[in-house]
Length: 291
Image (tube, rainbow, N blue to C red; front, side, top):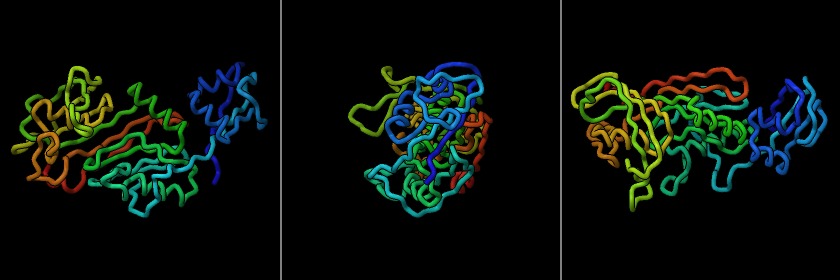
């Protein structure tokens, strides 16, 4: 199993520690390299972070091999891969599948199946799922193949450089064609699962655009500008248009047996190459039949 590694070229004289920070290597990642079996090489020679760099020096960071957590078993299962390289894995998650194992569903999650994929292909990483989806929600999921790559993607999310767009079917006729929901979200009192809009919650923002107004419900597209738990579900219920099938937040299951939400688009900057990546996913059959 070959460890993940990245090579950079020094553009100007500096201390190695400063250059690593400029390249996005966090202190936590640096500590894991230092104490977890990784290496830092300059022109193929192992050095410390106090090493002075000259312009043109080749810096190679060899990341330690990661192990799956004890609670994550590798399982056979269908895995629909949209894109894969040494740093990223983009997959389609079907509805009615957990992203990670839970007490109620300890087996058969996307994470269990990806763990098997990593084992089979000698990928030296535990699971770093950067964009989780609820069990009922289908669509695109982004997985990092290394702790450092996960950190770089998290920075993109914080800086709003990663875009996630969804399509949903909601109860009622949404009157405005385009608008933004800005409402803080927090955990509902006496519930470990349910969230609600509340003054002391975390800032949350969702952009909404109507695709089509149908009989008794509307087909909308949504863009997340923040990533709060159950954000889309809570925001849509808050404005009186809960998702079809989302009985936790006021939706009915007469037309569909799960919340009608699908992650259709994922846009990000590749954390290694810097290239712009864009992925598009079609609606699942159950939602497609309603539109």
